[in-house]
Length: 325
View 1 (cartoon, rainbow, N blue to C red):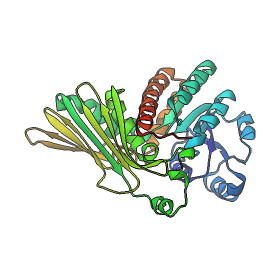
View 2: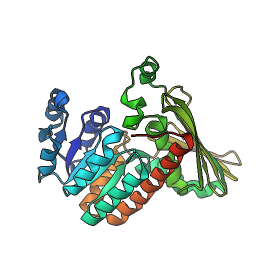
View 3: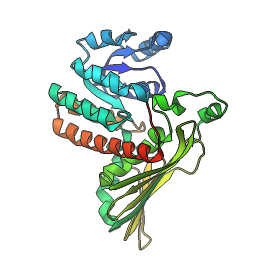
């Protein structure tokens, strides 16, 4: 994979040290805003990135780049991913894929016409501990209840209350607790159970943005509660309950750091199977492999999953009377 990276923000700064441990990924280009060029030059030197661009068209014109990683603010995902696909580049896009499901549908159709890989960077789907949960669900008997809680007080919330609206709390930029934290919970649950039959989002709304909320997902025989909060905090963990046992996820649903399986007879099994310390390693190893092999079967399966997640997001926002973008 010969990669062009879009952005110089926190996620990119977290990504770059990790990706150097995947030799098959070559860092060819980095897109920066003019005001962040100095920072981009530092990243270029530190991580041996080929070229720094401030013009997206110029990056897309670089024929040595075969894949673009969209690591920009949420509201830019759709447009920048679309332009990359139109330029004949494979696209890896950070979560949330888009702001509304119809935008993702359009991108999927465009990628299909171009025979290009389009995939969402969503860590939990590729982690070994998550795969173990999927494998061991049958041990729980009939599933009954899932509760996911990813609550993390944001320092930006203090600024928000003081009147400074940063991207994390800006509805026009796709901010809010649902899109930042609860989105991981949605991916976690939809990856296990598929699309729900009913969605309701009970949000704490300030200045037209959800600072926290409880998402209720209904399945024929399972009830799910997903909590995401940026205005308060709580022990971060998730539980899956069935008629013959339960699984506890220790830590947030984006890292699935370890799991504890508990049977009704009291037997407890602790599992920590993630092979890499960095949460993004497994997904980018998978992305490199599927792009190298042009594995469109896997791509379609992951896109179906992402589409189901975005449809949950649409229903959640509508139920709370929220509009992003």
